[in-house]
Image 1 (spheres, helix red, strand yellow):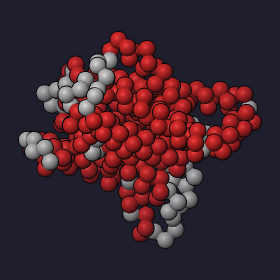
Image 2 (image 1 turned 90 degrees about the horizontal axis):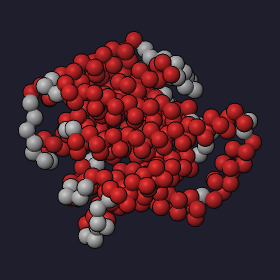
Image 3 (image 1 turned 90 degrees about the vertical axis):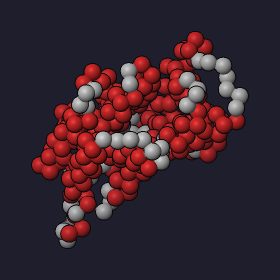
Image 4 (image 1 turned 120 degrees about the vertical axis):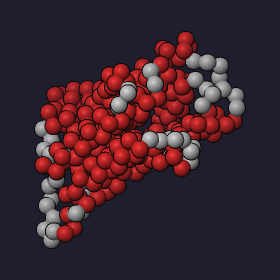
Length: 306
């Protein structure tokens, strides 16, 4: 199918993010905010250099395309691009705050709530249609998150804020299709860096000197920021926000499996059951894609996306 490459891009993005801990754990002694600062700043430097030295024609073409747009479309493109940067920086800020000042459980729960909020936002804001089976999948997801939130009800509020910022990022970028995705992501990260820059002198610690920090930072910038964010935006070109949003579950599932088999953390039977339900919800939500080969005539339009 024509949409397979977009589903593969979304899957690959969240699959990569699932292994984020491999780069974060070795530098856990550094303040989380410092890691955030350097992650954003180094990502911006890398992406700007790539665009300047290897993608000048793309920049020129996009600039000419932007100038040829009607004024209303130009304003919409600017608002969606910069708005995406605001949602992205807000998500990273809130996530760090929740991780450091609320609980790790609340931060993890946010990734489980995010697909549900993405689906709901897309339904009301983008009028994305959902099938009966997809609504059933949302219901299963809600139930599994409720199970995981037992004894952690105070965390739900903070998890909702964290999840909502990223869900809004996904939904807003679904409509932002007028610029090259890599260039759009560069602009968003530059804008995010400008938002973070005033906070750097006050809230940053001493400049790291250990080679390990910069080795891990390189992995974070390339494999856990630039590549997955680009894949995420690319996926939104061909499939709707709800389908991309439901793929977020791949991230916590991988984290959960790594916690058991790699970090040897103890988990409860309730957690195992909840994650099993989440895996079922992913299959149910994407049943049209997973089982469409049974049909000889494959539709050219899926959930309103041609």
